Image 1 (cartoon, rainbow, N blue to C red):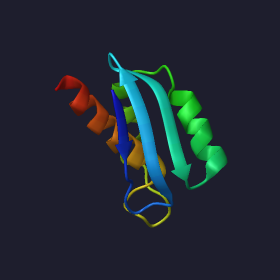
Image 2: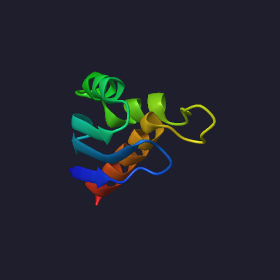
Image 3: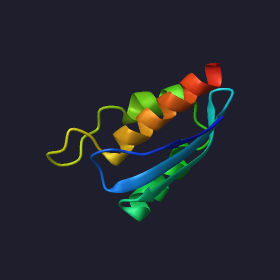
Image 4: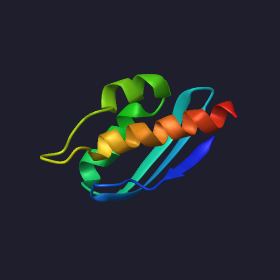
Amino acid sequence: MKTTYAPRGVCSNLITVEVKNGIITRAEIQGGCSGNLSGIASLISGMPASDAIAKLKGIRCGGKATSCPDQLSRALEQCLCEEKE
């Protein structure tokens, strides 16, 4: 299942994730801190989506209530919901 997610309240502007049988096969984050986000995308590739969500959800950036990793966890949650349908 492939999901495109429009993050809110962060520097990144588009998140695309692909999950197959609960495993992340691809993640791409556009905008934001390119090196850090490319590194995160690489690290979660091959990981169970539920594990990545548990690690990324709730991370904050500075004084913001969210962060690019937190928004990535939301994109993964959306993808898992769509995969179940």
